Length: 118
Length: 107
Image (cartoon, rainbow over all chains, first blue to last red):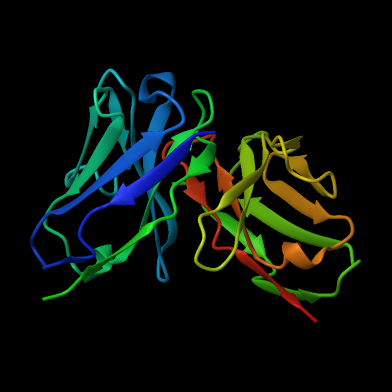
């Protein structure tokens, strides 16, 4: 059974870069597409972007200018960087596996709360 | 972006009740809709995809219907573990978007 686990700082200062990692166990990161999704009280659930094991990515246009996803197949994990954060980026961030090549998310991490505050 | 509007925003029901939640897309999304269940402090769980296909392991009391712009999630006989928030999601148009959620509460 695939399991995902997010890690990273829970507090980031405004204008700095949010960096999170998602460790995948129980399956190979080369077998699927992988996404980041965030959830905030004001914006609900928002898809951020996806990455494939070969490095192919796609991002939500609303965040594209600030987001970078990367993958490390040797460690079976992938990462999110979000630059120039503001309070509006405060949210629970989830990593999730995409079912087949679709945008359905069949396995999720538990989520990590990231607060943007000085 | 396609807007997904769920109704009601919250609903009260009792164990054994039949519950229906609706989701309306701002334009046709054919059958490219999924439904998720989320409990407090947990990640969403995929219940149904492509409007009607039950994800493996999901009880058969959950069902989905609809196409085009109007979709429905039905729980045929509510169980205690079903009290949660439910979200629809469209994957027809980029970027994928979610509804705002329907909170299912105990009456």
